[in-house]
Amino acid sequence: MAGPGIRYWEMARVLAAQQPVTLVAPQPIDLHDPALRCGSYTWGEAATLTGWLHDADVVVANGFVLLGHPELAQIAQPLALDLYDPTPLENLELFRSRFDEQRQAQHQQDVALLECQLAAGDFLICATERQRDLYIGALMAHGQIIPTLADTDPALRRLIDVVPFGLSVAPPVKRHPALRGVLSGIGADDVVLLWTGGLWDWMDPLILLKAMPAIVAKCPTVRLVFLAGQHPGHIQPMRMPIAAKALADELGLLNSHVFFYDQWVPYIERVNFLLEADLAIMLHHQRLEAVYAAVRSRFLDHLWAGLPSIISDGDAASALVQQHHCGRVVAPEDVTGLATAVLALACDRQERQQCREQAQKLAIEYTWDRVLLPLSRFCRNPYRMSKRSSPLSKIPTVDDKPQRNDAILQLDHLWQLQPRESKSRFPFFNKIKQFANTFIRWYVQPLVEQQNVFNAAVVHALQSLAHAQDQQQKQIDIVKERLEQLVRDNASLQQHVADMELHLCDIDDIQTEFSRRLVQQESSRDTQL
Image (cartoon, rainbow, N blue to C red; front, side):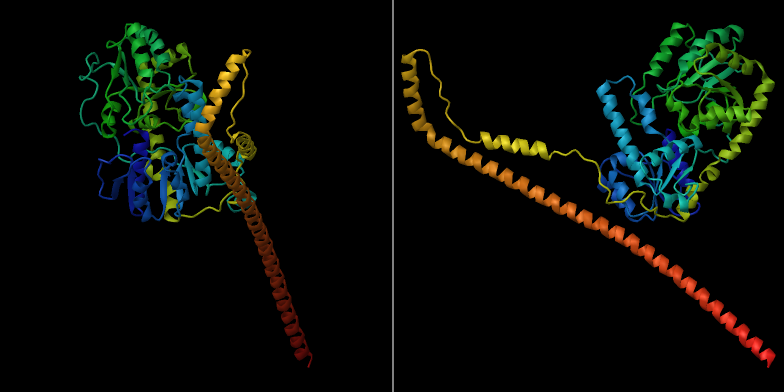
């Protein structure tokens, strides 16, 4: 599994402790847990998902699923959508090398998907507070944060809350060797620097390779290992693994000080690699994807295994490293600063040990049962949020009526076939053409008349359809206007009812006060008597 698969597997296991859980995915699930009911569906085929949804009381879904299954936005059950990955920002990097037309089409799809996600979810979850601010801005821009919503949920935590990636409560236990003694060139006493995440195009392993000659010159025992296996899903192929391997070869470091582990490491096997490393590293470019990325799952593995981390500044992980002193933070694209940070940790066992202890303390805050508390609360007591925009609100559309009318008008002028008369400068040729036209007209005229009748019928039919469409649109507009008036009248009636209830409360208070004073007067009179 990659990050999303890990996230939903662990999420399902935690939620199964409080209620029955069914976990379905577009591919068959080959893991087993007696607490879970597992299944699969076919991406893009609504019927294969409908059966699983039928018996559900509440649905939790990756927001990206709406792309293949937009019908999910119309289900009757409360729907929690996971917006852990800001897709529009990630795809800015993923499709950076594509043609402009393809990038623009992808961007339009991503924006439309985000709009659908924000409108469909009764409860939204994201990965960081910074992401939450981003999504709240998007909700506000689309008019979905209205006064009544803010009145009932001032902090908007019932609408959107933070659920980061999590970690196992159980401590890591090594099962078998993974690097030392397995990859030729890595010895028992070497300092292993492990790149734990994927070599995605938005990450920056090249800056690390450029720093390696300076690192090796001062500390020859450093060995850099990239976990560079091909992503197990149907993700866009990455250029970075090829570029990184080519640069390592060009620098003369490949398979001597820099190694590429080319198989995807299974989830349960990653612990063997983590526990054989001395340092862990993840670097990125200074781009929007990094700024609003989640606390990456592989960085959290650093904490779980107690590994000191070297992280590029600017993302959520770097903030944790700085705050909790569990590694070093370097400026993006700073070769010298990066070499200095690696050498400092590689050569100082005491600092590494301090970072290990701090990382293990921080890991406790990210156990799955802790990070999933907001989602657990929603699933225990699910709710439907009132729609943040009126279902009768008009969706802007392109008005094609003028274009339609012009086309019908042009057909009205052209429907009748007419022979064209043309004269030559030579009288002899004119007589020949006149004779030929007379003969052809005698033979073709019935067919022309039949065609003209057909053309006239088609034009008249189109005119009738256009008229009927205009009348239908007028009726729709009238119905919409009346429905909107009913909504306004209903709101006004509800306000009147509320005012009357207020007045009735006032009358009750007056009656109560009158009765109290009457009792006081009677008591006073009895006393006087």
